[in-house]
Length: 153
Image (cartoon, rainbow, N blue to C red):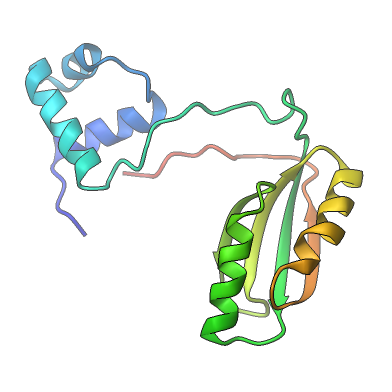
């Protein structure tokens, strides 16, 4: 892990919450010159600590109101099955996140679709046809309590 000083942590904290902040305002808030703030931010991006910038969109207003978590159990747990599954799941736009996990199943997927009918179509048309899928368990989210928490740096 890379060593970060207090100023780097301040920059990262501010960028997590306010990705559109101007360099001038960032510099003012952290007590550096605009040039120094810009150089530090550029270094943090170059070093891979900042993975990108983007807008957070309202999924409900855009017609993706149903959030579903899915446990996926594969029929075999071999490197080639893992690789084939990973390649295929990356192509599914409904899958927002996919995590290989330890425990009673192999992957945990976070998916977002319009409604339960759309999820049913995704399940039958995409998810169950992914390489190596033996079994799934679906958990439809009733309420999102916290979904945009920044890292505690």
